[in-house]
Amino acid sequence: MEFITIKAIESPDYVIRISHKIAKKLGINNKSKVLICYGSRQWEVAVFINDNMPQEVVEIDQSSIERLMIDTEYNYNYRFEKGNLIIGPLIGLLYTHKRRYLKKRFSNEEKKRKYDPYAEMMKKLGGIIYVFATDQINYEKEEIKGFVYNAKTSNWDEKVFPLPAVIYRKVSVSDELKSKMKGKVLNSFRFNKFEFWEMLKVHPDLAAHLPETTGDISKSSLDALLKKYDKVILKHTKKKLGHGIYLITKEKNKYIVTKNLTYDSIYLSMNEMVEFLEEHKDDYILQQFISLKTYDNRKIDYRLIFTKNIKEKWECKGILGWLGAVGGFTIHTLVETNGRTLEEMLKIQFGYNSKQIARKKKEMIKIGRKIATALDSNDSPYIDFGFDFGLDENEKVWIFEANVYQQLWSPLYLDDYDMYDQIIDSIVRYLGKEAMS
Image 1 (cartoon, one colour):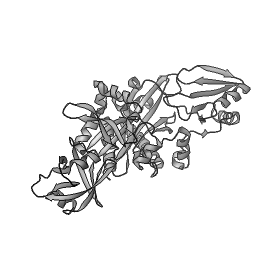
Image 2 (spheres, rainbow, N blue to C red):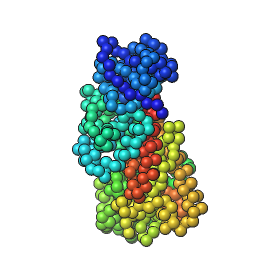
Image 3 (spheres, rainbow, N blue to C red):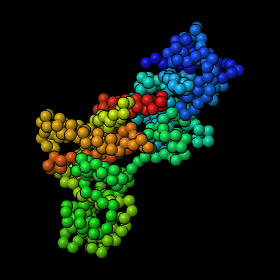
């Protein structure tokens, strides 16, 4: 891939000077007008073709560079279409709400290494990838102060940039930012657990893998589910990491409610259960309890990591297995010490051989790809998902959750740097495509 460098020149006019070779390659005529697009900014200049210029150098007048906020320290890719000369890519990664958290990450050598693949992708694609926090956005000036990799010092420097051409986000975004980005915020809509279930239940081949679920938080709904399944989960639709989850069972006329993570249990009468459900009416669902196949009395679930490639196809970049606490009814424990590869986990869970592992892996990926396709939307485009699956005693695959804000570096808990690099490579390549379109 051939890159260009931008050089500032003094000129009373708004101009861009390019070599004859670049002009011929792009189909640009001398003294024509083009609209330079850099991030979300645009500015019209006149083209002058110079036969003596090096092919890799593009000269732009200083005033235009300042208006576009072009950083001349970096190499760029370029593309010309319908009068627009796109210089980039300029990619923004919104990874937290507070600048101080990013400052801590980039001041810590171990945490900073997690961003090495992004620096490598800048070398491959050209342009700029900057990481920023919500409180670094200047809406009035349409600028962002973010962190960008400096190849000379191997540090991440804090600099001011224009709004990027595309934003990949891991936290909520304001309507104002969405409006200014004109649809170029990927993973922009975060659905809750009940919305996820509702989106999938209309697909018969996926509905067969979903626990029975209701948003009607009432004693009658609870009793109906308990009659069918003996155990029922009461789950908050928005909380994460195992919070807001209760296991409900019944003995004679008493309900037993066990809280996740603490495993504290309370006994409730019928009237007390009515009150308990009333208190948990908002943002909760009742769900069939799935008895997963355990190992040493520990639940197991699987995280499937899907990314969208530049051809708009969904690919599984990896499957990780997680062990829960002994006797627990979910797997929310310290993933740093309880992760396994898919192959290792299927061996200890079912005693699978290599052929059985391959078949189950193929089945899980097929289901995951169907989910990703079902969830993807032109109105709210997605670029990656993390799906949580479980396997019951009969080896059936169950779909539990989809994570829009999945923790991308989870493979590093297994020291799988290759998987992590492939995930970042796929995501950034797609962002690069979007930024240059």
